[in-house]
Length: 388
Ligand SMILES: *Cc1c(COP(=O)(O)O)cnc(C)c1O
Image 1 (cartoon, protein in one colour):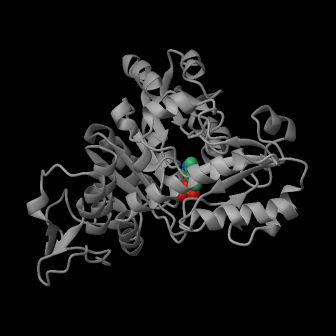
Image 2 (cartoon, rainbow, N blue to C red; image 1 turned 90 degrees about the vertical axis):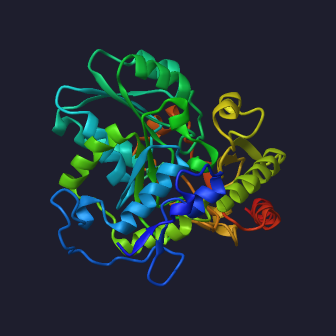
Image 3 (cartoon, helix red, strand yellow; image 1 turned 30 degrees about the horizontal axis):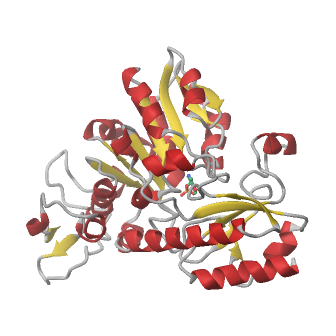
């Protein structure tokens, strides 16, 4: 190949920003270009039978570059890039759970994962139990048939924090595979493999892509776990095209800078909202009074850039309409701040009784903090609260 890994950095111990920029990225030997060239081919000469490149084999140079980057960022042996977060999540689950097996999942998991489990697990002969967001509850629901535990922390939209290490330690003893959706925290704020988790899954559509212009997913784990995931992925086929891989790689180089700044602003906005009498509640792991704060402090290096809040005595729809900078949108993790009403979007299919049971009220709003200046965001919220 004419583009190669920078051999000088091989095996070198690097800090997180250096990793984000250099790991996985290929150098173009012919021209000296510092970026991974975009290899658009879907047909490659066969080198040997095992190793011929093909996009759906998940092994082309552009796929490999981003896979190596996520692996390094998540302190994993290896990684894989998918065409969506759900492609990564469903493949990871099905690689380790099949007919007759039992899966334990948080009831607060991302809506798409919840949907996949409730609509499709029975088709594959998989039994599933949903639990509350505590390590004790997860452990209590495990049976002799449990093969996989799927968790998320912090959760959507209430930012509940679970004790990752406690679940991981128990699962290791019982030889149960653990999967965590690390989308909300990103590897900048949390590296779950260091806490004993087996497989990290990302919706790369969010922070890794970071600019609201990509749909992709990623997995990071040991080489042994990856073998099964890769084998199933080649059968199911949710692979990412080279041009999207290139965009993702470009974004991942600024991941740490972006998420660090977004996290800092989120803390500032959370403090601002908490100080207001017209706000009924703020959900953010960085607040000292927040229920999961102590666990978050132990297992996260930063508290993330997602927060939720409830407004008092005001129509949330009118409040959102009054915002000028923060735009209503369902996705998250972009450079622009977005806001959404979970009861109208991610949790719309749930009955209102069920929604209230898990704490999703009609006045709950979820905010994804972007890269705008904190003062402008606070001013935007302040003006809308005064009007709303
Ligand atoms: C968006 C999201 C997903 C699904 O990712 P897609 O890229 O939309 O398939 C999974 N988990 C979380 C936490 C998400 O926010």
